[in-house]
Length: 107
Image 1 (cartoon, helix red, strand yellow):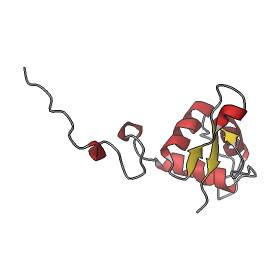
Image 2 (image 1 turned 180 degrees about the vertical axis):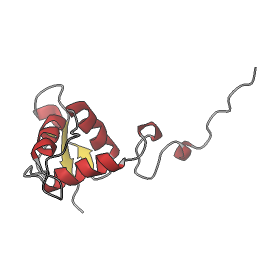
Image 3 (image 1 turned 90 degrees about the horizontal axis):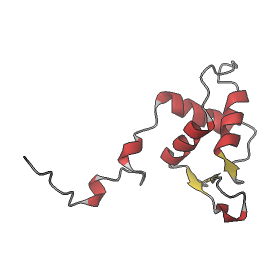
Image 4 (image 1 turned 135 degrees about the vertical axis):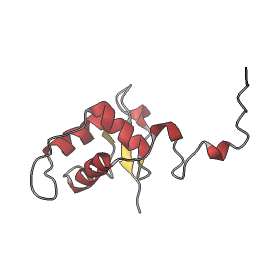
């Protein structure tokens, strides 16, 4: 029985955005959802939840003007916001307990 070698360099585990590798990269569909979120009427400079983001993506048309057929559920949208380096968790202790709020980083 062969023993697995321990990981010596922790930076091998973390990718460029500082997120854990197990989340993977943003797929093309997820990139479309993030683009729709940026084009939506949701003010991302203020705290918003994954449910708010999923609802705004659902009603925002794509670049051709059509409503998207594949829309994210709130849990999937939250996982996408974790993957994205453009969004960070907001201090949600002031808000509803158990809900994670997000805010967009200023570029």
